Length: 442
Image (cartoon, rainbow, N blue to C red; front, top):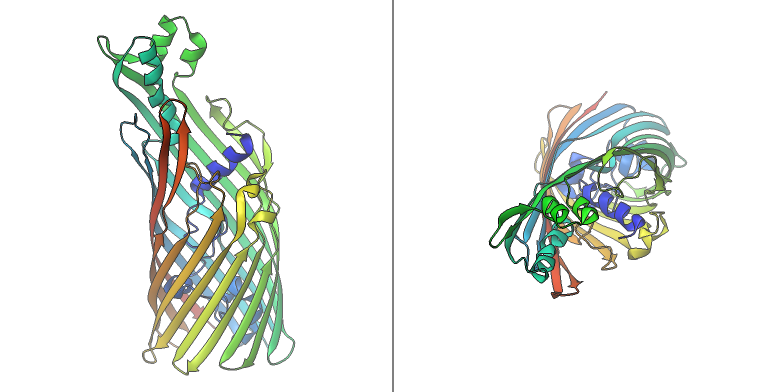
């Protein structure tokens, strides 16, 4: 694997908290989003992220929100490589703290706002038994040993890998109402990225018939192959990548009637350079210390519609189009055949003056080359359903609560071994998210 594809793969391994979004960007940025999956035409406090120009529709005064999401995801990989001990690999992702903070000051035609949240990354993936791409070469050595009249009945290895990634965004917006029905907004987001990787490969051994369990390092050293033996020595890796970038944001909100709102937002590409600080890399090629490389956050074009069919009933539609092919990912962007897009639909109904119920659906579509889809990094198109409620505690305080489940479309890719022939790896996953948030206005 070339260096540029390895970079993309390792980052893809941990960019997982974006449960409904592009390859890199997270669009799950409020509890209200989790409960209805369509917020691009929001006229609430989370419009700081989704529809900054629409903030001028808020009542005059201060508005605050603090939300958190708890994310559970299992990334499942099955390999049909015939020599493996176990064909199934599971990466577990647990994100107990995924916060969003919003603050808005609205006065007459002007709205100033601040937002904070994990706008990309935000996940931690653990593969307690490694990955097929790590283990298949170890398993295939059994064929070499048999060709040397050293038949084996099995192998054993201790493999572990985990990655953690978070891109924290600090966003500032200003919105102005040009007319009673037209408002515009401009903003700037500072993005701070950090990726951590840690793993090991220990105790590679084979059960050679007539000899019992033999450590591969000792075996190849005794056979006079020290370079081969070094490939089977215990290995550790620990590295961190950091970088910063800026995202300009332009937005437009049109509300020709009280019952109808249109929104449009464009986030420019964020130029992101990541620098590697390596503590240990016994593999010798995964994380060169001091390496600087590009991994941009793609530009995004977003739009939304909000329509009040009745005073108590509202419908929402949203789309996001991610310009993945225009980002600089050290060449990996060439494996994106078509840019990613999302389409979300949501509705909410005021059951009474206190309780609002909501439902939503989201379709996320990827179109990637088969060479992008590997166990180190892959993306799956999906359908998501979400639901929840808003509870109005007082005139100034409300609570949002919601949950969603993502149904992924599994992907199978063929691989080829020069002796065993064609085999497959199948990628699948599941995601459940729960969110709660408090909103307060003065």
